[in-house]
Length: 93
Image (tube, rainbow, N blue to C red; front, side):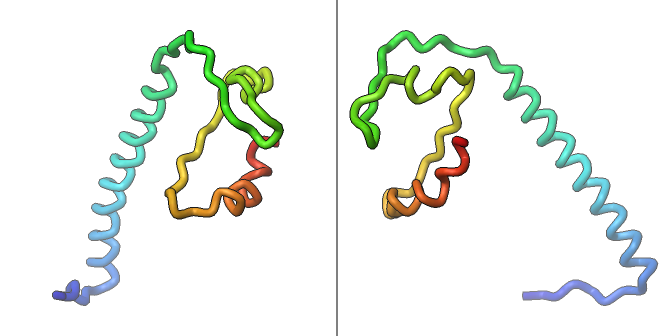
């Protein structure tokens, strides 16, 4: 692997300033995309979904518990779900 050149502090600062402009453009574009995602229209859920919970079957309404939104985290199959529940149980509170 070829290593970068060793330069003076002023040359380093100039290179850093150029990179900072690109980084700020990237952050602004990411923020704009996130804002566009938040403005996406919602879609009604017409199907009656039910899930197996720790206390038996629950509906989608039960899972939301009156909230307008619900975060769903996808886990790799090899991850122990009991461990994930213990680690993430504070998120819903």
